[in-house]
Every structure is written in structure tokens, then in C-alpha cells.
Length: 281
Ligand SMILES: [Zn+2]
Ligand SMILES: [Zn+2]
Image (cartoon, rainbow, N blue to C red; front, top):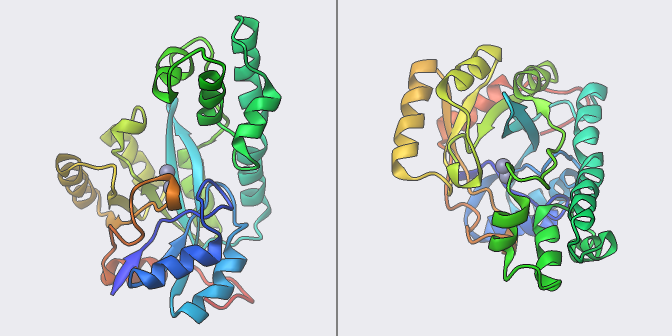
């Protein structure tokens, strides 16, 4: 049985509709699928409607943008109470502040004479989640840089003068919040160095103490050495080990189900989720 516990639809930054993510899972022989869009539950209703038609079991999830000691990290929350006010407010803050943050970065670039505009960046985002990739595209289009890579290197890197940090909830708070909502928290791609700085083992220990269930060890962004190290850390801290594709549709190369979680871990995870009244899984 193939189990993939981390995927994105166009409710966040994936390119497939939620129903198409479920269909893609069925095509790839994935029997259990979690949809975990960034900071939103918006895709879950459509995915839940499609799942029985495709013979896929849906695990309801979300990927929460967090921070710990100034470092960005992502927390997966499985089966939390989606009506919890505090959780919804926190997710709303993450979403709402993306636009002003991008606008601020554009304003800094414009004030330094870069020939781009906010309307153009918005147009390049085409209604999706606006972010640095779209600002980079605007810089490319304006001829200020040759490609996205140069745009990130020269203008958009986190330690550069144009970068504006985006709001994110403290990771320890987020772990406790997910647990309080009856959900099960898993640290997403804890060792994905290529995306930026990652937290150290002491931070993982802190999250474990706050109620973390597991580490997403098997992830496309982790090399063998990272996986081996994280497996050791999980063993020492008594954390479970999950594996997932982090599928984004056409936006990234990985196929759905390319990394998987064992049935034992899924069972343990679902056993820790507190059932919400009025919801059938
Ligand atoms: Zn992530
Ligand atoms: Zn993700």
C-alpha cells in the first residue's frame, strides 16, 4: 500500500486542482493521500468529494509556515479541527500578509531605480500565491537580470537589502496549536538545505518536547546523509518517520507517491488524531 502524506493543489502553489491531485494519486497507485496546502484548508472539500470516486483514502492536512529562532520552517498538521478559531486566524495571518510583504520588496527595488511595478508582479503571479519568484520574473522581463537565479542572487536573497521577511507563527506555538486542535504535527523536510538555512537538532528536540509526532525524513530535497542523520535524531527523540513527495504538479519534478510512509506509521498517526464531532474520515 503506497501512502503519500504531503501534496499541494492550486488552493496553494500547486498546479493541479484538488480533484486532479486525488486522480493523480490513484493513477500512481497511491492508496492513502494527504492534501497539505500552505496555510489553507480550501482544497480539502473538493479532494474529499473526489477521493471515494478514485478509491483513495484522504487524510486531511495543512502545511503551516512557521519560524524558529529566525529560521523559516514548515509544519504539517494532520486532521486538526478545521473550525478552530485560533488555528484559522493564524493561517489567515500567514496568507494575508504575503501580499503586503511582496509589495514592500517591490517598493524597495523601485526606490533603488529597478524598472519594475507592482501591477506587473501581480500579473505574473496570475492569481496564485504571489511571492519572490514573481518578483524575479518581473526583474527578468525588465532586463535587469538574465534569469530567476540571478534575480535571487543579486536582489532577493534573505540577507540582501531588498528582502522582507514574511510573517510566520513560532514553530513551538504551532506544534501546540495543532495538538490542541486534535491534530498531529509532523516537521516537513527538516533538512532541506537547498531551500535556505535549516534548524539544528536542539530545535527539533524542543519541538519534540512540545508534542511533535514525527519528522518527514524521506523527502525529495533530502540526500542520503541527511536522511540517515534525521532517522537517528528521530530514534533518539522517539519521533516517527514519514515520507512524502511534496507534489506540486507541473511546478516541480517529483511525481506523486515518489516517497512514501509506512502503513504502521500511518496507523499510529491516525490513532493520535482526535476525531472531530460531525466529521467522518
Ligand atoms: Zn514545505
Ligand atoms: Zn509542501
